Length: 316
Image (cartoon, rainbow, N blue to C red; front, top):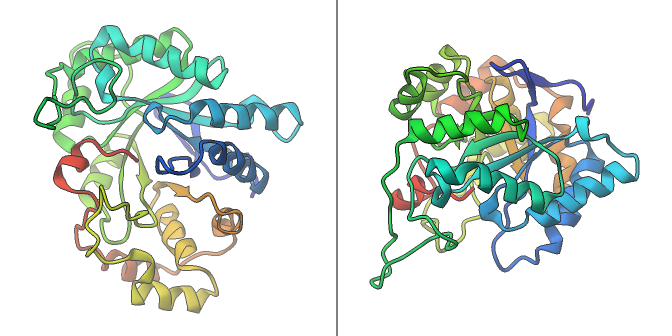
């Protein structure tokens, strides 16, 4: 994979690699694995690294990036690093300090992209998921337009090159786009997207506004019991997807990733397995026919792998 090729231009003049490496792992996975996997990903050719404060592994991911810079594998400008503003920090005065904390953990001078993790705010504080005495999440009321202005200030300050959003619907995007005095549009909207949830309407809207759609859970999900209905179908076992994989002599995961690239979607591939990390980079070596893209389009069933409440606070 050519690290300088296969990029999409963003509406602020920067560009984003179309294939990204997702770094989330469940709590039970040792944090050291995040460092190991990120190093493997960079060695395999990934140049877009997607992380977040919520994942609680930015120190390890930052260490991996710095070690690959120090050993000459990459330069800092080769790496496109995304971090996310967690929902307990959506009050405007908390935005820049949250980014500065991520930068301190990463030991980097800037991130390439900083995005609002979700439009649904939780009560500010150190607890990532603050709950009341009944175990219910404690929500907060916040003006997302004011949050966005604070994001713009982070860009002005040089702490991030680009700013975007995640898990926003069309109405929420329009609220930002129609904000009086808007200086920078969101460059992207990162959402759950895969052949069972193609997000066609949202993709068309984002394209019409020059906003890049970034797909997470593009391979389905890790099916964590606390988040996902265990009776939901396993995407990578879909008969049509498996038949297509056989036809192209590829893995079902490679087909699912390639599908997004051909739709003009930036896609995140998450794996801590060295073999699969290397396989996922090979999506640039083949192309699906337009007929096969249509077959995958038709798999859509508007299926979200996360429950309604978790969809609002998507952790990926």
